[in-house]
Length: 361
Image 1 (cartoon, rainbow, N blue to C red):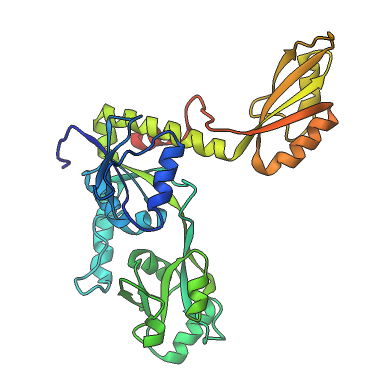
Image 2 (cartoon, rainbow, N blue to C red; image 1 turned 180 degrees about the vertical axis):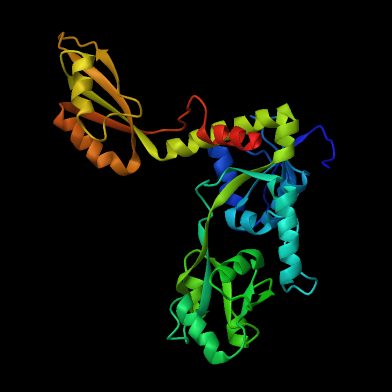
């Protein structure tokens, strides 16, 4: 049961690799966070005064959103995937209690408790990393999960795996038929575990791979468990029960989606001779890139000489800029001006429609 409260809250990462990029995303999306004292764990968003900002560790954000003490949170998809369930099936000594954990997992699914936290946007564009099964470089004959099975047979005992992600790791190794793998839940630096001998291999996050190489470790070729980046999540019950929270969810998605969509695109302006806007548009429609999002905007240019010129405005993806300029020239465009785009608002963000659909399920 969620404790009733008047304020609406969003939790942002207080530290780590997600902290600064999260603040930067909010600012660029027109939702700048005002934090007068850097030591405070509470702040505000002047453009969205109904929303209170609090700062927590990424792991705690998932718990807070799930329990309903905050309404929204930005965290990593890896953290969400690992901790979104209320009971992760661990015993007190940090090892997995498999039978009890699986029974509790089934109850969670039947009771719907795993639905308490709802992802609103899974790809915020920062915090990219992957969760992988990683082995020592000295295991020269071990390159994939099949090789790992042969190595285990040579060891004549279950594999010991150190990780901060026991739920995701257990699921992965169960799928690859390692039911007796011993998961060791560990905090801090995992890379040293194979060297000191308290684990045979590790499951950990990889961003650049530099730390692995420095510690003579390598990911298995088919050992990818999860691809991750920052995500926006919300408490399902608060969305269902509080119209004010649902309204804030729409505002968050409106601006974040509009910014993310715009960040992938550029605005192009070009002058073009032609008989009419329709005639110019027909030429542009024969091209692959310069058709625009729904079509180009074409308006007359008033010249002193009385020539028939038109101004063409359109949006193209950044990775298609060179082709767009080439296509514009092919249909008579000149004087092409390229500018960044701040926001692209749709009639209604797809993510918002998906949220409403998920709430109806």
